[in-house]
Image (cartoon, rainbow, N blue to C red; front, side):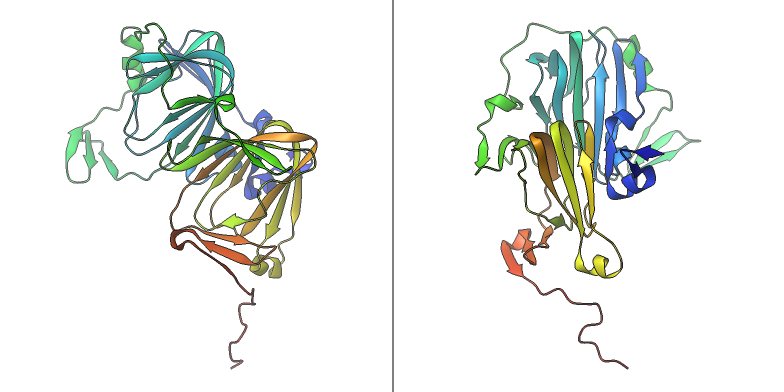
Length: 328
């Protein structure tokens, strides 16, 4: 299968897909009716899920819910609707960002008359839960509860319709791109930090526009943090540079042309640095990045390493594996 002139399996290995090539799945029960694209899985993300969701007019994408560990960040692409949070509703539309910390609001959406389309990012967490089918027991560590193996959405579908009152003023976890003070990086780029350390605990989330022909962050790769980029407008070239050891083993630099709808996944520990250069019309993208206090970041052009947890940046000398070892 050819995608944008690059073999599909190669795209998956290096973390690039386009949403035109990702299958839609519809789930509709009762007042819930939405189509889903698993963009993160298609792009090869590791610790973060990314879905594109289209909610039918007047419908919900999911039952009201909250997560004990996962943090969710939503970005509205099109349409309109209401963000339902702990019984209150707030109007949302394009370029709005909705943030739900773990173990906080119970939340869902109600699509407006024109439907609602959004991206949702969610951190993935391993669980220590076991299922004993004969006793129908769910083990959570040592304690256990009696479980069911039918679909909880069937129960939700039979429940009374979700109560929706008049919209209230928007709280601090709902913000629009145009409401956030921009950060300007000379003549290169403008960044709107939609989710910084005051809004989220586990990840950052920015809207950024690269000016025509300009670059964003310098080439770099992370040891522990994961980054995901979604191209919204314009065009750009993605550059991938292998680390010195990977280059010594034959890995070559790559360039990939991007257009709106491309998803770039940069899992941790890849040993491949990335950077972007905008096309003639510039490029607007969403940038999602996890926060890991023990992350190390390598900058190949300057041979620097940043140890985030230590607050130290130092220059290193790349060496071959056997450098300095006796030949015996």
